[in-house]
Amino acid sequence: MLSLLLMLSACSSTGPVAIKKPDHSPRLVWPAAPERSRIEFVTEFRDAADLGIEKSFFRKLIELFTGGVEHSLSRPYAVAVHKNRIAIADPDAAMVHVYELDQPSYSSIDSAGDYHFESPIGVAIDGDRLFIADSKLNKVFVLNKSYDVLQVLEIFSRPTSLAFDPILQHLYISDTLAHEVHVYDYAGNYLYKIGKRGDKKAQFNYPSHLAFSNNRLLVNDTMNFRIQAFDSNGRHLQTFGKQGDASGYFTQTKGLTVDSDGHIYAADALANRVQIFNQRGEFLLEFGKSGDQPGEFHMPSGLTVWDDKIFVADSYNQRIQVFKYLKVDE
Image 1: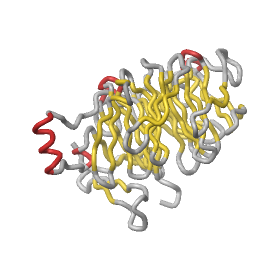
Image 2 (image 1 turned 30 degrees about the horizontal axis):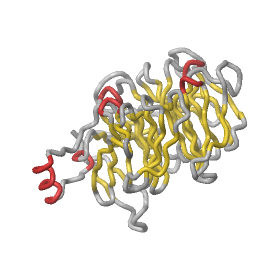
Image 3 (image 1 turned 135 degrees about the vertical axis):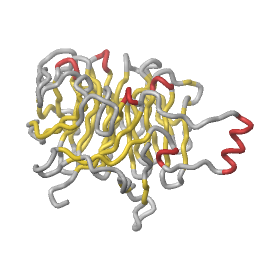
């Protein structure tokens, strides 16, 4: 197992984490030479130890008496990153894993207030708040930094994915069985919904994963085999994608995310690849194939980007893989 070299920004205690590939690992990039590399494999992790998070003496002492353990990933489905904090929804383990890289520390969250998680499937982070969607409880939980419950949102048929607008402070929630996306404000007040079932613009057929970036909400319209984009007020902007297994087409898309240059990443789970599009929805590049080696996937699901590091929830390989977007000037 590769270990991570974690370095915090020298300028700020809350700066983004810089993750470096160990020197002994061969360089793995896409596209292959002689073309200019755009994506580079960085590392992978399955548990806190892979992130260099060591147990303190007091933690070991507590676990000696309580029997508590630090958990490996069972089926990571969604991943969120904010500065030095990584949260991973793991429905098979019925918990959310949280790694605090600046402390460093690890927490496993299996409940919120009086509710014990059954299928935590969506996760998002905003500052000190952690958002968790449970698809069996049909609830979305808003927790503070101490994991106390601030709000419980519960009008859903099956909440699946979460995205947060840091400017308007809006939380977007995909309700897959209702074929809708719900929007809440910072205080947890219901604002409006987007969509209904159908195949026209602003209509969905089992929407799943969401991403918010550059004042745009991206919705994975899964069974319409397309991605739709909306502005921050819910107005439809764009639709792209068709069913198929060729490059630029979708078999079963899941996670979505966007890098600093606005490129859109979509995890195509059945094809075991991540596809990259420009802001117009034009295909640019794909990386990954079926397998369990670095840069290979078995049903990739959740995606997120932080500081141009691409985190991929490689669900059935029970790991998170980390890649880097190589900008033109790098």
